[in-house]
Image: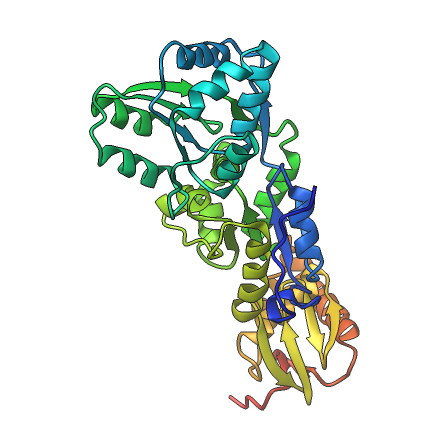
Length: 387
């Protein structure tokens, strides 16, 4: 199978070093390898933390009952929310010996595919899709149906891992008979430790972005943070220094409802999501300056010195970023101490700052970038602060 990766001419977002120096968390389960490869190909360091898992319901009595309900009488409309769900339904029907009957019933209905993946699954089954919303959202599908007279219509709704209570209730209130088709459900990933580590990294600023490919993954991460009493801190991180990147508006929905603005590509594709991050992070997450006659570009976990990428450990990077907030101005040791990871005790604070400065100078290479101002502190050599 050929991966659906968008191809464009070489540009900033496709350059092999566009994301060099940035750390990005990936919460996907399905196609996580593909997304990670797209980001790593652009130089990113990827932290993988699957948030959810799909539990197929092919043997579930509810799916069989819903399928038989669809076959009891003609179905007028079928809402297909996901490609993987529709394919799973078709596979389950084949296992029950109901494939031919189900295809015949669906062939006489209007098939409303929520997005291109759902539409592709419909066509792969030899069926014809009737309509797809421009926004690829269930909300637009609901509005489309409610604009019509639904009294007496039989509508099958393929669920996508979680109940669509409001969607279904609105159709029923409008007079439709609704058959809910539970093809699979989302559950938290069995091992939650990688996700919890990612939550901690986001809160402490150890990652620059977290990429989401489904709304359930967003909800799972927020739920894991809430269980540890960290939801507010995680949302604050997403609202400030950590980019929340979502593949589309449906995925971004849980964050939008909580006041977090997510970065999204124009098209809901993995390739487009990777390109959007490769364009956004260098534009918003980079500090550029000249110090000691050398050009610096400060990124997430690395600094580019005169065009050469130099990864930095957390403590030297924290110190460099603090100095870069006021280039050329003296920053005293007390101010540098508070940004050090782990918060050293007062007794060890001065030594910890000195060690971080030493490691920073060693990593930067050229001398003269970081200056010591006796009895006052340190500064980047971007001018003189005599006050």
